[in-house]
Length: 302
Image (cartoon, rainbow, N blue to C red; front, side, top):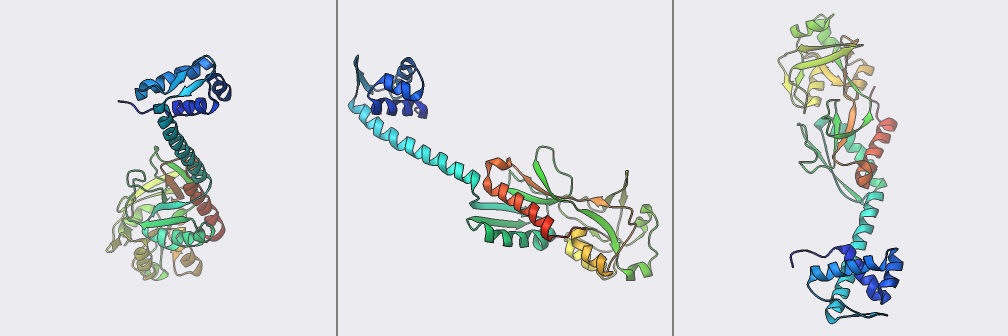
């Protein structure tokens, strides 16, 4: 036997046995007796055995047919159970959810969100991994990547979770020591706190002012791959940083940091990036919807 039997043929056969006839089975299936006869013949050919004795009024099950019938019942019951569980999984969040995010945003913003989400969905197990590189969501087995920044490959599925942007800022002590730049090109002569974080090009700041867009190459004595380190250096008066409002908004409001060239900014919205459409997986859909609501309710992105 080179082929597995078609599950539909097994179902047709089981109905024929229960109804003890082709016509009654055809009526239940909403098909013709000829169609039922054809599917039984294909199943017998696939299994290379005779399943039914046909008479003018009834069908009788052969010895082999009895074994196939009981076997088919188990297979069909298992398939029905599988389909029910898949349908439940699409509606109710359960199982393990693998999520990736960058260091700073993941620790300060996403981790507290998942802590609260765990109370609402106890059957969902979140495995949050913080990384400093761009994740290939599907290839690396992640269900979801929470990403800061608008550069998203067109083949990925994404939903914006929150509006955010990056700003230039420095401590008053630094600006007292060094004259604040008056135009973007002057940043090249300043101590800039450079960060290599995930998909951000190292030492190149792309900024917008209205419809104008410009890139500037910056350098400085201090650089890191961790945003929290760069913010601390900025607070220490070591230079100018380009950081997200979620990261420096509180420091700007308190006066510990001040905006530099405030007309310039870099769009850096927060996105949920995932490999499958939301209606396929309840755990991904619920997570995305919860994060979107959480950011709107509890996170000040400035």
